Length: 150
Image 1: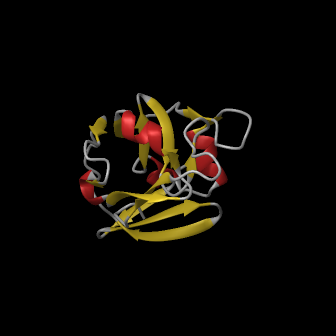
Image 2 (image 1 turned 60 degrees about the vertical axis):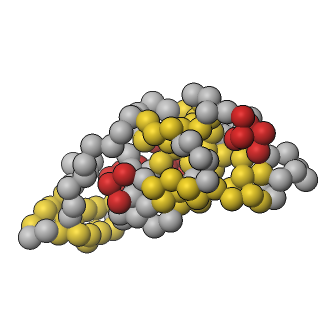
């Protein structure tokens, strides 16, 4: 089985990359299709997934695109693609998550940042080509506080 799971007494045992992982089971409520991030500073995520915080920094997202565009948070639906900044070709989010060792049961709960309808970043993980700040300019760093994605 590709996604083995044993659930018992409020706990789950899962297998990922030849390791057994014991975690507290939880009911995953349906996530919204999109959340418009109006103030672009702080956003409480649904289902206890944490809080997104945007701060100024010397790296991160292009500040002009961030300030002038419509910023949305979405969650993985499947089939999303991105050219990570500094790399030359598209990769699916599934492949990017696999490369970074993100377990399958966590992937759909990771917030994705969209600007004007285009995937721009995965907080704490990567920025897509065309959205990263240029060298020497001030950017916007989006970080996620801890939530229930373990």
